[in-house]
Amino acid sequence: MKTTTVALTADNHTTDSRTGLMSAVFAMIIGVGIVAVTGHVQAAALHDAAHDVRHATGFPCH
Amino acid sequence: MFSRIVSSALFAGAAAGLLIALLQYVFVQPVLLHAELYESGTLIHFGADPVSTVQNVAGFDPLRDLLSLLFTMLTYCGYAFILVALMGVAEERGAIITPRNGMIWGLMGFVAAHLAPAFSLPPEVPGVAAADVLLRQYWWFATVALAAISMWLIAFHFTMVGIGAAILLLLLPHIVGAPQPAEFTGPVPTEIGALFAARALTVGLVAWTLLGAFCAYFWTKEGEAA
Image (cartoon, rainbow over all chains, first blue to last red):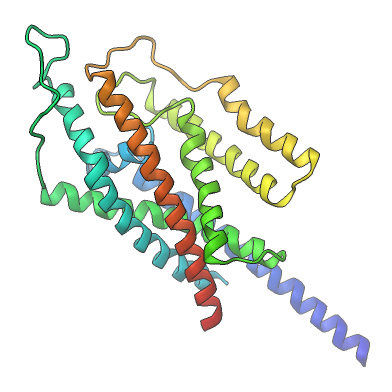
């Protein structure tokens, strides 16, 4: 009985930490996506709107 | 964990972004506008007439400045997503996150995302000569990714091998070399270019320190609330 409890806990823990890692990976992909759009995509409208920020933040611009 | 990352990153990015946009407006934007007078040909460096160093640059431009505010907040929200996610991973592995050590996280973020690429591609004042933008962007992303891995190694694998690998990863993009223009054609005085780079980097340093502190603050606060 005791062994089962321990096994369950251990299993839950693994699942938690896997979900945690997946969440972190997804969040990082979103983060990189946002920085790519605000700082790097060369579409004219985006470039003009973000122009000053791109220079001030040290992104390659133009 | 995902919703905790999202809400803390949005709060941290918005709060830090707002303060950073103000700092950029006061200290970086006037230098940029001054440089644009040379970029557009309104002023000519080494022209027939000497040009005064004091120029009346354009003042508050509602649309332009609001867009800069919006994009600064968005950019630092993007960085906050990455920083908070990494804090979450580190915390699961036993690290303790506090607003105080969050500032150190922020400093390491500054080194990775701002200082490391600036070592070979310094913040550009408008009008400078530069290589193809796409090539520079590839180099920029690779350099930032390698520097971020280096920072993680220094923070969490503080061994001879870890430090050695971190140093190599930091040096590699600069030994390979960043894309450079074939010739220099910038019409802007070097004094303005140097001031711009120094201002951009220093505001970046403050920005990331704030961002790190805010990320850690909202991350721990959202954790208590859950």
